Amino acid sequence: MKKFGKELEFISWIKRDGSGTIAIGGEWNSDMHIPKIDDMSYSDEEVFDVSCLSATEKTFIASGFNSFVVKLKPEAPAPECTHPFKKVVDRYCTECKKDL
Image (tube, rainbow, N blue to C red; front, top):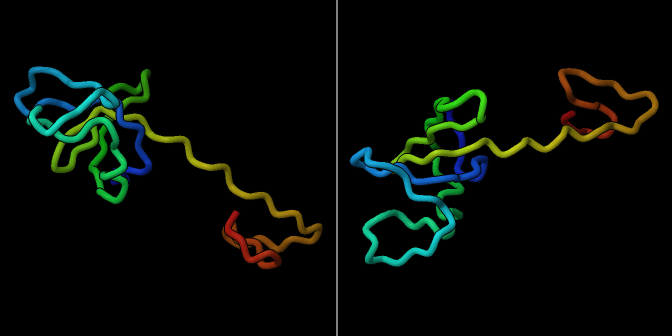
């Protein structure tokens, strides 16, 4: 599946040589020769190819230019329509003009 970076909770960066991972959120400086890991907001609009790592832990590998261990951020609940005589067609209320 494809996901934007803003839809993911980044846990760790996977080293390119496969020797391990580095936790996201630690201190970072440009001499470390690794991607920026102290603030992942730079990847909000990047599209990642996401595949399952562990179903029980709900973790995934997100691959783009770099690869990360991630979890999916919970989706916001659908808004409720309060119209007493709502007309819903394909999860769209024709009264309040909202997707449900």
